[in-house]
Amino acid sequence: MISDLRQHRSMLAHIARRAMIERGLEPDFSAAALAELEGMREEEATLPEGNSLRDLRHLLWASIDNDDSRDLDQLTVAENLSDGRARILVAVADVDSRVKKDTAIDAHARRNTTSVYTAAAIFPMLPERLSTGLTSLNPAEDRVALVVDLIVGNDGSPGTADLYRALVHNHAKLAYNGVAAWLEGRGPAPQGVDALEGLAENLRLQDQVAQSMKQFRHLHGALSLETVEARPVFVDGSITELRPEEKNRAKELIEDFMIAANGATARFLSKRAVSCIRRVVRTPKRWDRIVEVAGEHGFGLPDEPDPKALEEFLAKAKAADPVRFPDLSLTIIKLLGPGEYVAERPGMPTPGHFGLAVRDYTHSTAPNRRFTDLLTQRLLKAALDGAPSPYSLDELNALALHCTQEENAANKVERQVEKSAAALLLQSRIGEQFDAIVTGAAAKGTWARLLAMPIEGRVVRGFEGLDVGHRIRVQLVSVDVERGFIDFKRVSGR
Image (cartoon, rainbow, N blue to C red):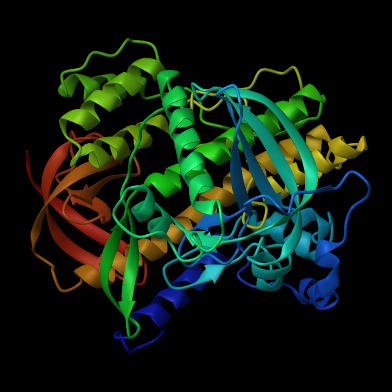
């Protein structure tokens, strides 16, 4: 182990690699996968795929992602229609054109099922020459993509959709924070926006359409949840703070467009009688506790799960106390339970996505980062070509379970590294007291998150009678950086 505690980034990278192995994930690509990569030629990236390929390079495509993202999975553009409706287009990188089923690179992607993003190291699902190069929708380059072409009503309702292959061109690589500050009137237009005629107007149109889509979804029961995520900040290799990252207009724009594209993709496959993998969040088993939490805020919920009623409660709670709303959101998220993947045979009822209030939903817009999206892309391409499905229903059932399990493993790796980073920050504060909110209460342990900073730890003493959402005061008892353990004892309730 690294002995120089000042080199926090190196320490956390070591912890991340060890956590990957402990969770059964592969941190490195096999020799066979690297050999496949070595044999790939650059010029294959823009070869047309037959007469059905449309040329849409003239459209004002742009990518909006994190400041440091290099694996660009999607581009977006919008168009006003004469009758008050709008047309939105989402271009998704054609990763399958490079990563063929049952190759060595595909085997690695299938094993891990997702890219793992930690504070100090990233373990990409695909080799970076692919995910940030040959299969990334990089600026100033022509790329073949799968396009979701969707009509949106003037009330934000989803209309007819078409899916097809097209040649696209990323005219501007933009970042969430810069675009959001500009859209919200807090900053200038990001570099490159004013340089391309019409791009600024198109981005504002995309924002307008996304907001109407968001409003439509929430009127029909999609939940307004808002949590605070944090990224470690390093200075000369040492962690100095956990900087909160909150939602903004640009993130919401992409989120709403991706929700629409994923829904359209699921319906496209269903109409063509193609079995696929759906993303679902089942009806919450702990609805009774959600009812209790709402009651504590002076709001009555029905005895049976009702997403519209829950959304009404969340909207009122946010308006009443926006500062503490992320704490309430975290409580509800924990009680809703995790998402999972399930195989869907056409005509077979599926649980749907409770949090989004939709029945038809899949993951399809991030094939460089998630295996389910790459798998869905293969199903789409087979359907477009009138070819047999590349996966049997039995394979899809097994892969849905595997992807759920490995996604959970990846999340645990990311959380372990986050906790190790938090432990580094707190190791000099043993004995201090903090206000906290209970985020987990089960036989395996009780957990609480500090209100002053986004740090979660285990309540090892005084946890009797605590439940998710309770406000308590805790004292920091100990930390273990190697294992990412942060232990509190309860001092009092609030």
